[in-house]
Amino acid sequence: MAETNIEPHRITKPIQLLAVWFSALVLIDSAFLIASAKIATPAWIAPMLSIAAVTFVPVFLLAVFLMQTIFRPQLQDDSHYSDWLKRREKMFHQFSPENQLPKKGKIITLANEKPVFSAPEERRIEIYKKQSGLFLVHDWRPSETEGQIADIVIWLHQHDEGPFSAGTVDRVEYYLGPTFFDKPMIKKNEKDAFKLEISAYGPVLCLALVYLKGAKQPIELTRYIDFEEIPE
Image 1 (tube, rainbow, N blue to C red):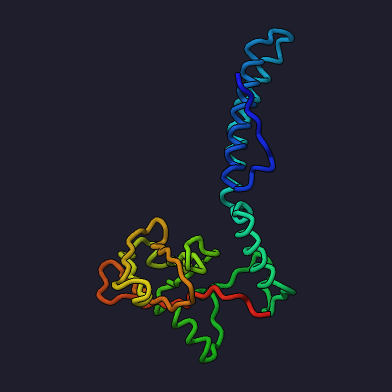
Image 2 (image 1 turned 90 degrees about the vertical axis):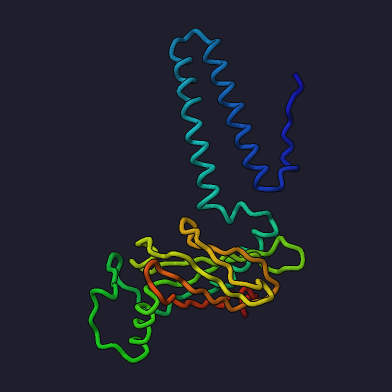
């Protein structure tokens, strides 16, 4: 049987690393199960190898799950991961929180605080109420599309409890101008937060109309989709 050689210097992409992981799982489990079938003495070795072979499967799957979720940024190709690190380092360079932080475990919400608000604070709370706690958020990465600078994902976010968490959002209509679409992009995909995926070569203002079930007027949301370099 021809030998399968893994050449480490040729493993340059995250998907290749995952393939190596699963190959290692198959090889190790196969070796343990074959050994447990052939080793008769001492009697405790065969059960131990069988248990180890079974245990390795959830351990490997858990490791893959963590790599695809918590450590997903680290799994990007080298160039994309390098850009991601540079953005984060520049964003949080000499970071020092400018707000007075509450004591650990003490959470203040709009429902249980009754101070005398200034006009701007009243306006801020009014926006929460007017939008029913709904906001647009976005994230981006260096684009993999020729001629574009950034790949962007825009989605709907619910602050605290509201229409989204209650399942009463019917659809979201996105407007980004004729450069992107000649008609509104309508999203009804509640399970992935009504997300919209675009590629762009420059920042753009996104307008979204959120239609609630049974409501005549939509909630209007805006988001400036920016991916410029962070100023020094």
